[in-house]
Image 1 (cartoon, rainbow, N blue to C red):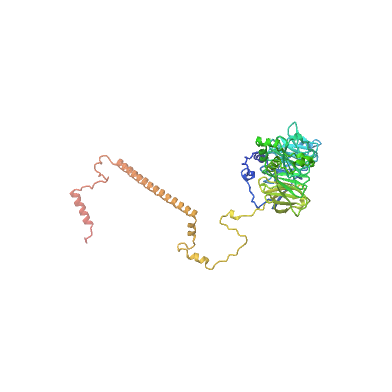
Image 2 (cartoon, rainbow, N blue to C red):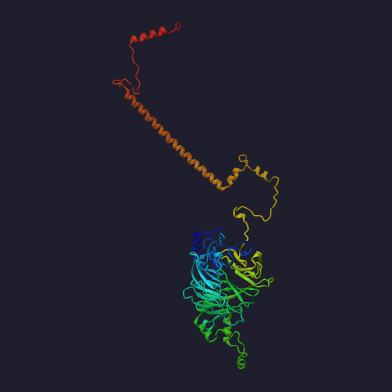
Length: 587
């Protein structure tokens, strides 16, 4: 397929750069649609129904959609970032560092370059104009997609598993090195790095709401995964021993810690498009989900002064460091407090139960028939379904309903994929792009049913063919009811159609107007002919008057004819004689 022209590529980048209007709190952003069109999936339908097609140009290692879903960025093992036009399913642009592909003073083809490292992650900025990628050689590059140029590049000591922009500041990125803990990284000349803290030690509760200043926590050096929240106010850090730490980005304080069930190592965190749900992919046999509510931390921080005073004096917050301590209290103190209910302890327990953190444990998704781990997981575009791929060499995808947790379907794809490395949901449509371990991207979509009634409202759809039995007098009765003037029934059928009747009435009205115009025209022509005849008569009279001899004016009558001449007696006698002579003898 041919590459997309430059003008169309610039138009797509411009459309992707438009920031959507914020939706009211409590509404899903995907429900309002993107741009001129939006897509809603039914409650009982999901996207993993039909394997539509496969996309491959280079060996893909990672992929990501922009916010509108019009462009798909795919990193390859050759160090090239391919920009796919998802509507035409063609490669619109290729991003690669020309300086890294220079061999022997000559620029080689990007696909054939062997000096570049594989791309491990790609992510779009919110405006859709920039793209950040991390490679296996430890380099982080920020691309200007429109100009096809690298605007920033830095090199770490070890490969980065993931790098993404901050939703609040495009000059700040979240990096996950393979030799250090997750950190924020400034995309400026200073290249300042700030490690993200994690909950020290282990916790014995599913969720612990607290506030631990980052100054009192040692730096995290354990490699892990981290993601920003939808608003960028919090960062979710996957720490050791299966604990997810919620860090407030403004102060770098730990505000919550969650223990993932049946997990000793967290491999990946996945947020939904609306930012209200999160999946935790671990080494366990289940996929844990959490509900995200960032307003809970704001309400906790904006409490009244009296409650904060009671928390600090009467009932201090439980110290997270003391959760793993042994119960070696003094026996004398225990004896004195035996049988006595401390009001402060009761108030503290009640407040702990009422306190709500940013993350709330929701459901755990699993398949009783599958005992292996999960290699990838993601939400659907509307967060109604959860899709996960089982580890191993099979292209096997499981789909659950998020609210009920019931397993809807197990979809099996191509065996040539050799497993699933990543699941990328489309941001606005019921489409999944599944990245296989063989570097091929498989497009899964819904199975659309043909509805002929959409073209003809009177068309009735039948599930099965029905044999129609005609009555003997069915059409005879209809013919007897027709009048003699309309034996075929075409006139009655035409009259039954309101459009035809109105059209006929309009034609008749137009004919009457035309007839009236013709009558007026004929009358005007007759008047013109009469006036022309009168003018001709006047002209002839004038010519006759001009042709008269002089002195003969009085001899003519008014009509222009000469009066009869009087004969004398001799002349009359001679004429009578001539007539008598010429008459026959019989007379």
